[in-house]
Image 1 (cartoon, rainbow, N blue to C red):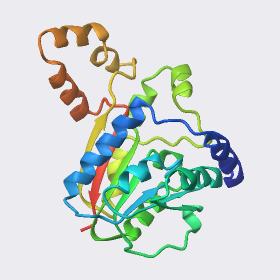
Image 2 (spheres, helix red, strand yellow; image 1 turned 45 degrees about the vertical axis):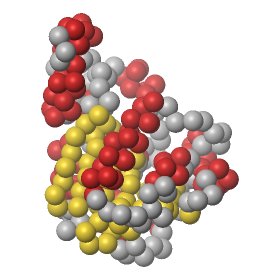
Image 3 (cartoon, rainbow, N blue to C red; image 1 turned 45 degrees about the horizontal axis):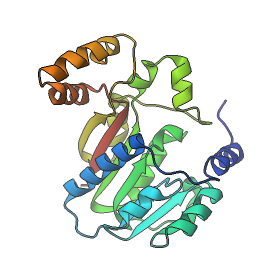
Image 4 (cartoon, one colour; image 1 turned 120 degrees about the vertical axis):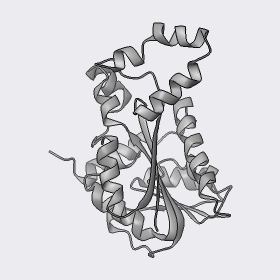
Length: 238
């Protein structure tokens, strides 16, 4: 049974009631998003942080262009407005948001898709919000990597009201309905211990590769083959 909207709002209000600094894994995602933003080659882009949570990423993005952050949680938005004065924040249910089509050059979606029931509509909305020539930059957990983790560890990692992870193939299918020139990779390695993950994430194997100077190559292979915990996708509205 899917959680109702009210229970999701309560959960995220409680989650974002107190401020905490982003951790190293959130920083890794932010770096991948900024690298993707750089690759768009758009000067001073109009940016939407689509599901901004406590707003720290919106604040970083606002360094590079005028930024709007929206989120379901009024508590998260209240805190974001207090901390980050250079960003426009709105507390809205994005599926009932009165927005202007084509208003943004870049839409950022950091770890939101997996918490959305109607994922196709979510992608459609991102497409509608972008001008022609704009970009969607999206990160989301990699279903294959999540399912390669022991259940207990997986629940410790994330156990939000709605968890709807996608594989790279499923994400590509969602995106190609509306977008072109889709680029995908994965980041955050070493998570997952089932099946082929047991070898590719072996600390002994990693130690050997590090000693012979192949650690970076190992990461490149894991990224290409999709062994990262998070998928990073960049899609163009042609």
